[in-house]
Length: 363
Image 1 (cartoon, rainbow, N blue to C red):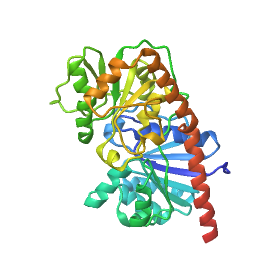
Image 2 (image 1 turned 90 degrees about the vertical axis):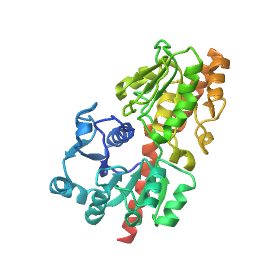
Image 3 (image 1 turned 30 degrees about the vertical axis):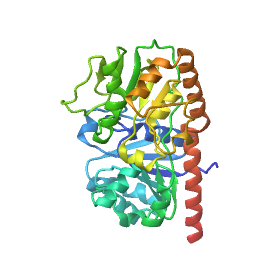
Image 4 (image 1 turned 120 degrees about the horizontal axis):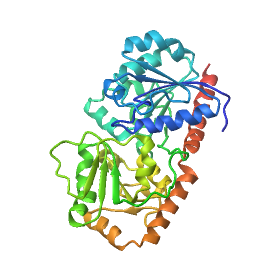
């Protein structure tokens, strides 16, 4: 559904740096596509030192980007932008996000949404009373709750927390940047992801243990891995891989390994942005299993599933090269059919149209 150009403000974790977070590439693809459709988009980001020191897109070429060093500065410089926006979206993991969201909801005259890129983690934190970027009382005040995770968890957000409308807004991929290339195959399996304690056991089982048993080449990219991890000799390490290197990374391996955080596995319906990015490059993906995976890719033909080291080893040893290429091609076709930035912004515009229409009726 096409919308008249809107004034949109997004307060998110980071758009200028992808260091240690997958939020940046998601926000970049959304802002890029929204701006291409004529919307006036302002992205507001806390000027955190760890992102400041690792910026890989200091001045995004789409929309406008504003940096602020404190909530006080945010209020001083951007209150008018928030107040006059047609649609304001606050993302998960924004520093002091609960205070930011409370302020936004107090002054915004347009519709307001919360975009949860970490929904199962958020709900676990809320249950323990440990969520620093959202509190339960705020959820019912948002017009819209957008979630990286779909399935039954959306009903829970509405029934338990009083969200007027909870809808999935999965991650997506910008196919201009993520596409096949003729790079030589350097590794058998590669994985990209920031260290997470609740993902490490699966990484060890599905990738590192096969590496210990095989002679092939493996690679793990991502920051914050502790010094105590014993990496097999045939596993190459890259501390940080900026997005502009992702395409060559994915195209330099037979398989990409996808590993999901424990809270996301329990909730299901939680595809990662890396899953779509690798598939868009035409690289065959081996993924851990979670409920709902088959809603996004057909196991066995568009993606392979591993539940154990033996499964990974079997895929490596028994999948013919020709079939590996076909799996990659089928996976890419599936992404192009429903998981590009264009598809996501179509969905976002549909949600915005509904809440803005509802807001007009109330007025």
